[in-house]
Image (cartoon, rainbow, N blue to C red; front, side):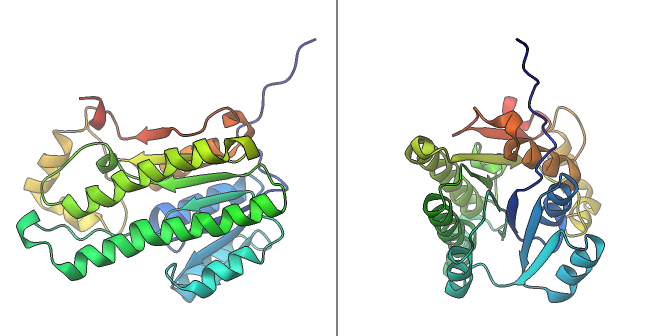
Length: 250
């Protein structure tokens, strides 16, 4: 008897939480999940941006205004009765030459990119275990979690840590039916990164390393997130989906 293939875009009856959802990749992920039928909890510090997102998706997006480092945020996550998908997207980068990385910037990157991601995943997993939900954690990593790059030592450090965390979660939580994967984008064209590519030297540096000779879009990263969250990825855990145009293949 033939069985139908799982539908990669059907996330109806699922609840997803997306951090850093006010713009760029996070906002694209929130919209893609809502489009796929999920109820989306969108988390960011900007109430105005979250409100515009909720207005665009009435009834599908619930805005939470939090700094992801706030212990009250983790407590609120743990109070949820339904949480199937976590997109751990919030993060930051402060490029500096290695010899000039300040203690302040190092602490900021570790706090936001690693510690907050860890605590957020921990809170989400507590819900999934308590409610016996076969959920999934998707950590937003980077191609810099697989390679090195000048001026990005602290950022590479944090993203390599995220890759290690993802593998550890996958192995530990697999018996409970909880999957953990990461997404590793290349440079993504957003309002924030656009001015960087106005610098011909930086633009050439990036394009010389992407065989496909183009930047990723937030929507392409969001499509990867929807796939990993969907039944079509039910046997995928502990892996990284690189959306990097071939950067790390070299």
